Length: 328
Image 1 (tube, rainbow, N blue to C red):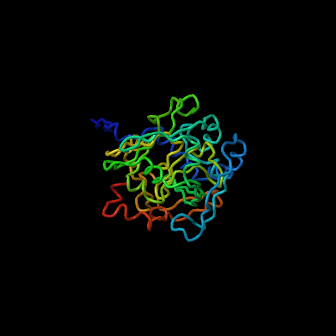
Image 2: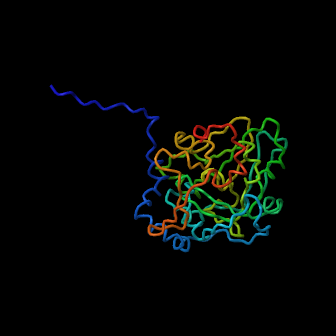
Image 3: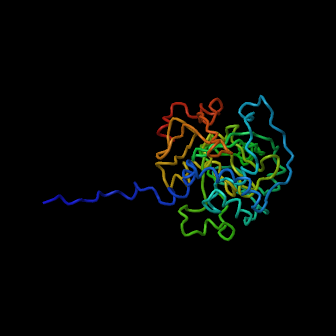
């Protein structure tokens, strides 16, 4: 008598959520020929989308010789940066943020700072734009999806705003939250959405105080477009892009490591630290190389990925003695 085939049991905790696989990794379809039309049309997408941001800013320009703050690598065209991005509050397609983020109101705006601080309170957008010395930082941006850009951000050190509220001795971590406004963020209303809104991110306190970590209010010398995180976003260039949380409304200092959105969804794929590391692959693709945008099928512009995205000299000491294959 032939043996009966039995279906092996797979624990639900081992199954990658369908939306995580399909939505966040849709770029993998572009590794083949599909990448050509998708990436070649970035500027066209941006031109067709409603325009937001774009007000001129007063700032100190980046200059050669500033350690880690400047790179002479070719900057990604601004239309491409505005057209190709992840901002799931507006949809999962790379073009959705540019198409729909204009629906988000960014003025008035305020950021609440709370938790382990001596002076909790709020900063209005006017206070942020006028109360800190703005400077340009030309950073590499490396997405966990193995594509990258070079962006000239305008902002100020994250440490400046944290110090203003006087962290207590118990402050070990910083938790950030994005705006959650269903009426203006169609992605949060989608029945396929799997994120527990609002979007959350976090840093260790010493990471937050590192001079490379900034709050950005602009790029290319002008205020941020909505799809790129207006009016205020985090930029931590040595980490994968999802750590650089957009449209921040809350900063909370805490003594415990906060849970982050992608970590809560798939901790085996997206860890708390999320440092750029070519030696630790994603479970489903290599992190050894990246596609520097703009990129097409015939001109893939693939380059080697650098440890800590090229900022090893500035941040490697933060992780001395840590097993980076475990704390990924």
